[in-house]
Amino acid sequence: MIAYPNFSPDILSVGPIHIRWYGMMYILGFVFGYLLLKKRNEETGLKVDANFLMDFAFYLFVGVLLGGRIGYVLFYNPLVFAANPLEIFALHHGGMSFHGGLIGTIIAGYVFCWQKGIHYYRMADAVIPGIPIGLGLGRLGNFINAELWGRPTDVSWAMVFPTDPAGLPRHPSQLYEFALEGVLIFTVLMLLRRLRLPQGFLFWTFFMLYGAARITAEFFREPDAHLSFLFSQVTAGMVLSAPMVVIGGGMMLWLWFKQPRRSVEASV
Image (cartoon, rainbow, N blue to C red):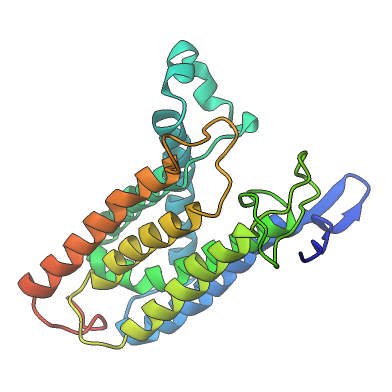
């Protein structure tokens, strides 16, 4: 067993002011994503400047907020919210769904591209390699916060998280997700981006790979207390991620056989 490093969740704490690692990880993800998008701007010819990026970030923020909350209501607690519909606005009570947030950002990104007169796949292929950076850094934030830990295990690298009331050795599943959702997907997308692929192929590759990575990680991650297992060892995260693998893989095949073999950097 490996001792948990027992990080402080605060980078800096002065009186009522707290700068936390978790929030900093998302800021770093945005910064690295912006730098990568600037590089992709040189490759694709997208007109990306500070104002463009801020507008785009605002659309995505609204999309992930609304989609994440609505997804949480529909996927996880529909009966609770049916009894008390106003609870959907109680964001301070917590409860967000990644899958709902993903749908929200896809819709928001499409609206943004439609308003700016940009081909959606062209923008999506330019932006998508930066998404795993934010996902990976977010999982590191989960690890530092000692949250979303894994299932009990006797592997030699198990850890006892200070937030676990049971005090059991567990898989550091946050680090597994960092490796799968962050490092692996980022590496694959960066390798593929130079190939002559149909537009949209990178986007759907991410869609498929994230679903597969999340399903894999769910075998080691402890389900949320209010969800537990749906049946046997199957979790809600697996069920919600399975369509991503099917739809993403199907769209990759459709684009490969039906669309022209153009470089992802080619303009529309």
